[in-house]
Every structure is written in C-alpha cells, then in structure tokens.
Length: 396
Image (cartoon, rainbow, N blue to C red; front, side, top):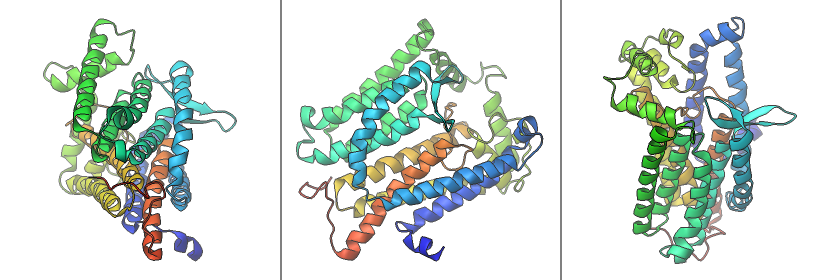
C-alpha cells in the first residue's frame, strides 16, 4: 500500500479534488436512489451505493494507470483513436441502442458493457486537435496548413454526434474553438467558424419545425428551448423537472436539510444523474452547492497552471482541452439544475451515477495528471523539453 501511494505522482490538489467529488458522489447517489431501489431492487437501498463505489474504485485504478503513461504517447494514440472513432459513431447512429429517440449506446460483446460512443469520440478528438495545433505552430496562421487540418475532424465528429446528442456535440465544438484560440489559430477563421455554428443551430431549429422526421431528436430540442424561453406559456408537464428542482433548491436553504433527508428525490426525475446537483443543494444547502462549484473551478485553475508550466505546446493544449471540457460540462449541468439553462441531459462529472461515463472521466483526469507527472520528472531532472515540440515556438 505504501509503495502504491509513493507511485502516485502529479498535481496533489487535483487528486484531492477528485477524492472530494467522489465522496459527494457516493453520498448523493445513496440518498437519491432510494425510490429507484424499491422499484428495481426490491428495497435494497445499498445496491446502487455499492455499484457506484465499485465504479468509482475502478475509475481510480484507470486514472492511476493512465497517469503513469508519459503524456506524449497520447499524441500517437490520438491518431489511431480518431480513425476508429468515426466508424464507431456511424455504427451507433445506424444500429446503436435507442433511448429517448436517440441511438447513443453500444454494447461490448461478451462482457455486455454498454457505453456512449460520444465519450470515446470526445476524448480522442480533443487529443487529436491538441496534437495538430501543437505540430502546426509554424504555419498556424495559414488556412490550409494551420486551420483546415484542425477543423475538418472537428466538423466530422460533431456532425456524427449531433443527431443523437446535441448538447455533447455543442460542448465538444466549443471546446475545440477554445483550443484553437489558445493555439493561436487566426482569429478571423475562429469567428467564421463560430458564425457557421450559429447558422447550423438555426437550421436545426428550422428542421425541427418543418421536417421533424429528418432529425427525430430535433423536436425535443425545440420543445426544451420553447419551454425555457416561454415559461409562462409552458404546461405543468413541460416544466415539471425544472419545477421540482426549484423546490429542492428552495427547501434546502443555506445549510440544507442534512444528508439523506431529501424529499424531492421522490418526485424529481433522474435525481441521481441529470439533476443530482439540485439534491446536493437540498441536503447540503447553498453552501454545499457553492463548495461543489468551487471544486470544479479550482480544478480548472490548476489545469491553467499546468498549461503555464508545461514546456511544450502539446501538453498545455491537451490539459486545457480536457480540463475545459469537464468543467464546462459541470457548469452546464449545474446551470440546468438552477434553471439558468435549458435542460440538456448532461451529467455532473464524477458525481452523477454512471458507469463507463465515470471511467472516461477518470481516464481524462488521468491524462491531465500524466502531464503534471511529466513536468515534475523533467523539473527534477532539469530537462524541460517536450519531445513533440522541441523546436516549436511557445503559444501566445
């Protein structure tokens, strides 16, 4: 055990944040799955607690193993991963497991584990964009040799994710735009890309109103937007989730009802996933909610520090891309819970009940820790060189 602890390297603050968030996860999942346990597990309220504990435990193992790998190897892995991701997303669209009019899930044969192919695509795309930007710094202002190689895979992957999961595609698209901005891509190309994104959203809404059969999920997106912007005209059924979340937040007050005493968990749909933040505020109050939010913001602050310390561009872009994606998703989930954003279906990273999504989150954090681990090793040895960026200029 002592040998295991000694082998843990990387940013200690990030390790602590992950442990605290995981603790919140166990407490919140145990509290919010009581009704689900009576419906599906014959009243065995410990079932989902033990399941979440096992998933988080395996996630920590994956995070530990990932952080042992030198982060520059992920650059090579990104090439292979991106090639495999495209057919994986196509298979998901055509024959994936259908849930709420969307094919998002695939099942791994033999072991019978289901996963969202978008989780795989998200990680590999961020890694690949970081690689392309880091290796193209000398030509980064050019359209053909700087911008085009980075944006083409982004467009392809996001378009393949979009029909089944608009919010994930949007988060990934924004993350890649942020990476390109940090990676010194010509600003006029980024602005043009953002404009194309806005036009694409308008076209999707147009399809939803005129030909909903072309994109079955577009009707859901349209209804959620209309409900959010026209609350006075929405029916009680359309605002039910948000209303129950508001009740949970208001009844929690400043200090909360204390752990395990939520009442809205019996009324709020998916209190253990999409709206788990509302349950946290109900039981731990505004104070608990602010603590959770600060933990994510501190995580991102540490990622920025890592990027500033990283001697090469790939490590900096990789850590910022992954860190921004995780924290951005967390902020969107929390914004939905407090009715500052339309319902998206995004989970709260490391806290919401899950399976493979938690594992991919842990792998992502493990990659960030791999960057910090390598910085420690290079600083200790006095060799501050990124093998991918030995002769490249630093980012702006």
